[in-house]
Length: 77
Image (cartoon, rainbow, N blue to C red; front, side, top):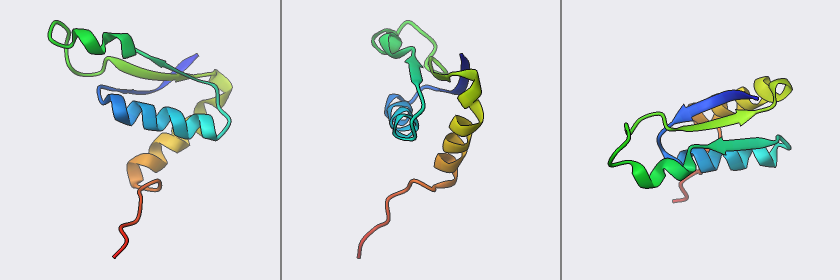
C-alpha cells in the first residue's frame, strides 16, 4: 500500500476516494476516526488515501486531475 493523498478535508478525501473507486481502484481511506479528536490533534494532514502499489500512477492521475479542475461541475446559466 502506498499513500497517494494526504490532507485534512474529509469531504475532499471522500470525493477522491469515490472517484478512484469509480475508476475500479481499491482504495483505503485512513484517519477518518481521528475526525472526532481534532481539538486534541494537529488539524493538518490526518487523512490519507492509500492504494495498492500497482495502482499508484492511476490514482495519482485522478488526484492531479481533481486538482486541475477536471472533475468540476459546470455552472448552468
